Amino acid sequence: MSPYVGTRPSVSTTLRRRIAAAMTGLLAAGALATFAGSAGAAPQPTVGQVQARLKQLNSRAENLDQQFAQAQQDLASASQRLKLVNHQASRYLARYRSMRAEIARIAATAYMNGQMTSVAALLTSGDAQQALDQSSILLQLSSSNSAEMSQFLSAARQLTGAQQAARRARTAIVELRNKLASQKKSLGKLIGQQKALLAQLTPAQQQATGPGTSTGTGTGGGGTGTGGGGTGTGGGGTGTGGGGTTTYKGPTGTQAGKAVAFAYAQLGKPYVWGATGPGSYDCSGLTMASWAAAGVSIPRTSYSQWAGLPHVPTSQLQPGDILVFNGVGHVAIYVGGGYLIDAPHSGAVVEKVALSGWYSQSLIGAVRP
Image 1 (cartoon, rainbow, N blue to C red):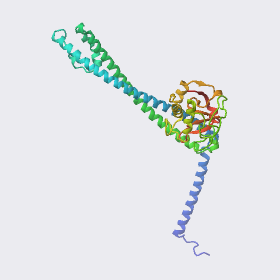
Image 2 (cartoon, one colour; image 1 turned 180 degrees about the vertical axis):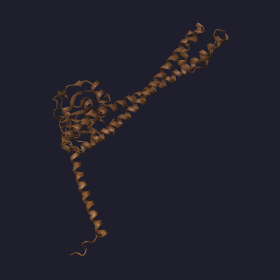
Image 3 (cartoon, rainbow, N blue to C red; image 1 turned 180 degrees about the horizontal axis):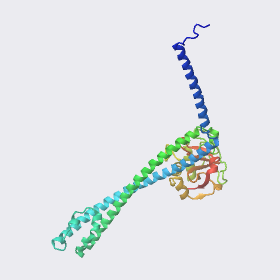
Image 4 (cartoon, helix red, strand yellow; image 1 turned 90 degrees about the vertical axis):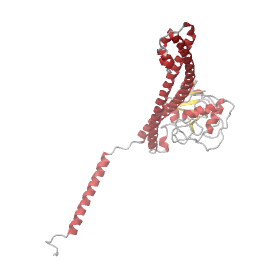
């Protein structure tokens, strides 16, 4: 018989038992919570769902990027317009002040001769609109000064118009800057979502989700090689610079050849939305810069390039043609041999890719500067 039978357990024994019971309860609760969490967790998206979502984001990012580029262009135009109207307003202000002094002299003479009862408004007003509002006073002056009166009122109208145009230009600039800031924030958010989704896919699974994501066909510079012609995917023109090579050795005697040569020289440079070179590009910035290098000025955005340049059948593609994709939201330059050079999206570089996969599926047409 144990000496401890009928005796009260020691404090240490009781404490150990309580701790053991508590640990057992915690383990059971943890297991239950784990089971409940697993049972209630949202199912992981399939590869197909991730690809579909990424394709949507790519499309939205492309369109937003081109809207951003258009807003930048509009802002530059508005700033130039403001500069012009400010210069114009300065000239009109000088003319108005000169004419006001002359009219004040005439009015003062008329007042002294008893022909007018008040010339205060004309003598003191530096506001062209106020002078126009009170122009009836001028009717009291001698008809012999009608030429001076007409010139004064004309100067007041010109100055008022220029001042109003300047105010409109300043308002437009503020609105465009706010629009740019909003678009930049939205685009940054989209880019973050794209990167998160891409991390869930293998390179092979990324194929056909958007420009620049199909692997195995793209080259981003650094490669060597020569190549001959090759027939364009659409049938028509023949390409030079050939297959998957990254060094252009085709003709440069034409403007199209110069544009293609320039595009080759940009391989490996980073994509940056809104960029037009020389260190980085977005898609339409690359096509615009390529043709600018050939001495041809074309519109800035994919929308305006599609709207403003002659369309050509995709069955008659020639090197230098601009390929248009994704509902006019993306462009690239065709380089022959069934290949194109593209600035695809943020995080990628200018690369040469085959006109297949996403590109062939999203192609809506082509234009030729």
